[in-house]
Length: 232
Image 1 (cartoon, rainbow, N blue to C red):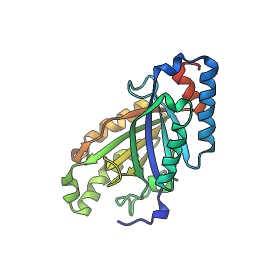
Image 2: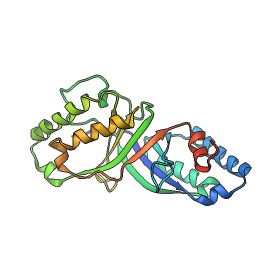
Image 3: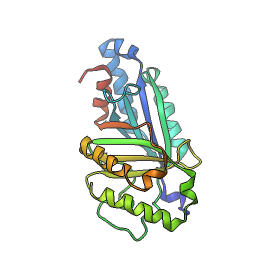
């Protein structure tokens, strides 16, 4: 299935750890460092959506969902972030590159809030759940109509949880994973129930990998940074 480049956006989900040495800096210095990053995000030529993972994972403290038109735009933003004072204290521990594309399985299938009817990027829900995913090679050897039939069950389960919105990123050949799957929702428990039900679907039996999983809380950039040193 071919899609015009102009129809796509390139995305990066990146999760950073913060060096404890940052918290040892004087309060005034920390505030200046955070202000500098806030101004960088606000003026970026790409979309940068901030999320906190403080207290939710041991290895990372915050993350960005970035969307642009060209790979070089993502590079430019990271280079500018590296050049900030706070950039000396943060490390990108996990990074997943993907592109938007319409699903080949949705043709003839319509419902309110459908993924291909939403603009690329977040809808603004309270929580974001992100993970890389690979399918077993046997999946791709199935006839297309058989794969569409199997995905039909996947969609029907998803319809039972209308408050959970899915964003599928495609990574074939541009990063280690095949997909980056992101879900937005207002309830951690509702997402847990959805994933548990999906585990019993036929499509799940073809999953080769779907970890690590990141549970993220959406917040303004200043709040995300304040959580790094406990100044909330």
